[in-house]
Amino acid sequence: MNKKISAGFALAITIVAIAVTFTVTMAMSRTLYNSIITNLSLRTSVSAAIEEINGIVSNYFYGSVDDRTQAITSTLVEGYVNGLGDSNNGYLSSEEYAEYTERLNGNLTGIGIETYYNPVTGEYSVVYVYEGSPAEKAGLRKGDVITAIEGEKVTGVNYRELEKQLYGGKLSSVEIEYSRDGKQATVEPMLGFEIPTVVSQMLSGNIAKVRITAFYKDTPAEFAAVMKSLQEKGAVGFIIDLRGTSEGTVEYAARTLDVIVPAPSGNQTLAVTYDKNGSKIDAYAAESGSINSTFAVLVNNGTAGPAELFAADLKDISSAVTVGSQTKGIQTVQRAFPLDSGDAVILTVARLETYDPGRNYDGEGITPDITRELDQGDSVSLWAISVSDDAQVREALKLFS
Picture (cartoon, rainbow, N blue to C red):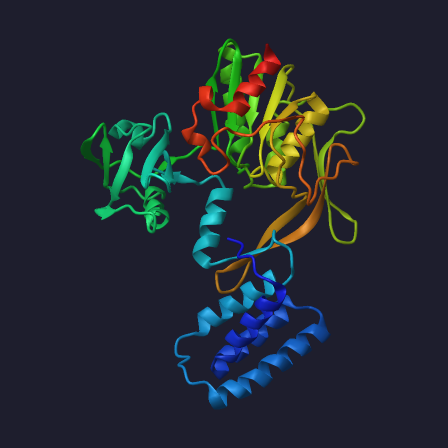
């Protein structure tokens, strides 16, 4: 989503792209700039540069600019956002923004599988099948190698585009060809399955592993239901897996955390956000939950944003032990701003303060209490690793012995 380019390069792309345009595009661009650039001197400087280069292009540019309005405007927005120098900012096309909003609202649907493309073997495999999903009912299993989707062969070039067809809420089927034990088969599971953000499994003894893949609108309720079910099964210790978790919001992370942590004495806030002037925006308090248990939290470089808040607070409030590798280090809050075109920009809008006001991990990440790398390296899908082969899970289990 975030295309990392230098500020100078972003400005160069912006100016060249804006220059290659008709009068109507110039008018749209000026209007757009006026709406997102509030600094008058900056706006004047940019407009002057655009006008100057536009004159040169009008006289000398050899190429065609037909039907380039949307592309130029999108490039303008993306270049401006990237030029701010904050890698947490980003630009979303109208399609990407619609998908982003759906996910955030808890509307992530599909056939109910997780997949992984192995660049070494060239195989695109099923690495997890959600219980009760259409994929499970159709007979797909972990380890199946998907060879074609809707009749198109899966390759290292197109698998990301093809896997989009495995998601969506429309009540139609998707044709999937796969191989298992050297035999080919075809299934047509239905779309529309609501993919959970919380999955769990009982491990040895009375220890349970709970994986949170994102902090969306439905995550707190899902987490509460899973924790209740695990306790009814006799679980007394929990490994919370936040590896690779970055999506969602601070609010939903705080509400999820509130399911298990007691209201702290004195400081009741799990998170506080402040704007650029230092004024408080929101505060999220611990109110309802309390699970008297032992917790371990798995983290890695993919643990970012709301997941880092969850890990930090669980450690500071309930003495959870963090295991894994250094987290990403995002202690700021981002917000999506929709544009008239249907596109959107993601901007950093606030600083985040955790339960411990003195905790600062922005740009540095959270160093785990126990550092342990995966034997398979960071590039492998976590869904593809069994518990017995997961060195970080094994390390966490030692805490309960």
